[in-house]
Length: 148
Ligand code: ATP
Ligand code: MG
Image (cartoon, rainbow, N blue to C red; front, side, top):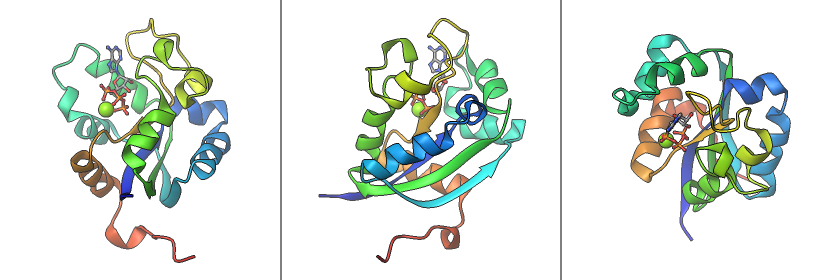
């Protein structure tokens, strides 16, 4: 048992589809407690900084355009092995390869053939990036670990 925190984003495609509630329900049904949440429309600067590790990738500009195309929901999820568990719930980056029953299989907007995968959700990929990404969006006092 290792309680972890991870940073989740419901991307503009899923917000536009009206599936915030359905995705939140998956978190709650799978032991991922929402301990901070906020809606925002990212600026270009914010999106470029958030995905800075991908700056040299061919899809970078399309990724930034996608992430600023509409508002997003950002949240901190907490639970046992939250980082891995949430990555499993999300499914593969390319929705074409996402397993049935995963969030990306059910809610992603593209089929994997576009310049950027519009894949409904983001999740941190390690404990180190989770910490950096949580701090990117939330102040310590905005995070509310469960007391009951
Ligand atoms: P995220 O970081 O959003 O949780 P991920 O960790 O599964 O997704 P990354 O490799 O970090 O995938 O890529 C970040 C985002 O860039 C992806 O979610 C997707 O929107 C886009 N992306 C990644 N690889 C490709 C690709 N080969 N072609 C098109 N878009 C891509
Ligand atoms: Mg990633």
